[in-house]
Image 1 (tube, each protein chain N blue to C red):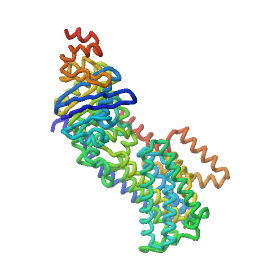
Image 2 (image 1 turned 90 degrees about the horizontal axis):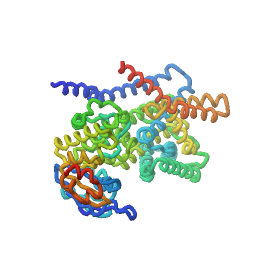
Image 3 (image 1 turned 120 degrees about the horizontal axis):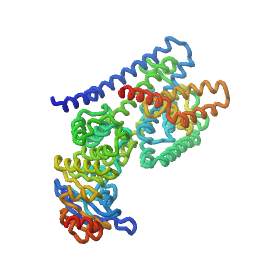
Image 4 (image 1 turned 90 degrees about the vertical axis):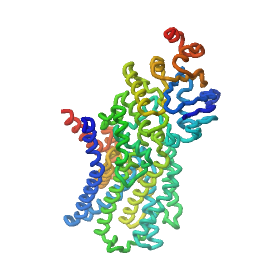
Length: 251
Length: 339
């Protein structure tokens, strides 16, 4: 279980994350929503070690990871994908996967053998199949479509076999149809892989449809947490964020 | 076997055999190259040609090692020549002052280079692009001025004079021109083979990941700093080897070997030959030395000619010669697949 306890981070006078405490039980799927500048990405950056929290704890199975480096946190089992696909542009899909498995198996500094190591194949192959990238294995990452680059980014996180997967706007920059395909994929991954998934999303229709639990952030604080129905009818959320459209739709 | 599994087996087959095959292929190419180079003295008595190959060995090792940094890791060092100078001076001084057997001096020089490279690297590899370039350049200048000012030890601006003793070992007499030639070729081929192995190892792919996206690499659990430091030291060792071949060839060591222009030449070579292929710098080495030798024969303004050639490659082709060839081949292959 991932437990966040009193996490805080300020930039100058701005409290980007302000005393946030949350529990993500094993195998849960949670959406994080909130207006621009609500501190969603900062929240992810604090958990994954890209930023060092001012105070608070990030407990994964009772081990405090707050303030540790990204490599350490990844090794403890928190993987992430990025808002803008963060990939290795000159490597092929297959090379990317194989190299990532090598990193996870701690063979990324091996000098005397040839790449790829045989023991990295099965996992790389499995994840490529899972995300539908196997047919594009020999494509250089830079030549992939935007959607496939996002999938490759998720594949990079997934191939490390994380306990918790953080997805920063998996559907960013996609058209409506592509969005649904991507989010179906995310849901499918969550169901088949039995991992804890937390994702940031702007599209309310998507959030309300697939997330069993929703966290609303606003000015670095938790405005509300709950099921889609609870969130839809929460007056604070409606005032701050949703506006009356969704409330009306729900009524 | 389902269709999917069949497809998978098919897709994996070339990769599975590939890694091992690639290694044998590289060794085979190295053996053939060595055989060709080593048999050259049987066909020609031209001392100038053999000298040319020895110089290519020294510069080739040096320039290819720089490509491990520039091409594979994205670390553009402007001070890589310091390790070339360090190799030449370290080896020359050990031979002159201690009179140990040559292999001992070689190993000792490599050990000294490794220690110094680890210290300088630990300071430099944290720095971002332009700062890394500047600070490596600064260290190069520091080593150069140390050589100049510590005249009692290094001979100052005169360099190491009086020749480097080259006692015979294991039946190899490096004072003999043919022996020196064969040894240089052997060192070149072995050095290239070792660097090729580094480039194609899992570590080599770690370097490529760091070049493409260091932040992402660290989110995969890679210690970026450690990997950069490792390759910085490895590259320094091969540059040092190049410096030792040079010291053996000229039987001395001179401050120019440690001056920043030697780093500049290695960067020129990489631009000429290209950094996207392993052998690009080797091709660049041959090109630069050929240009150097022919142009200086015709005009004293050889700097201008070389400058124009570099500009042509940098602005005109926007890539090195072997990059150009590699691209042409891959385009042809893609066109073939398209049909």
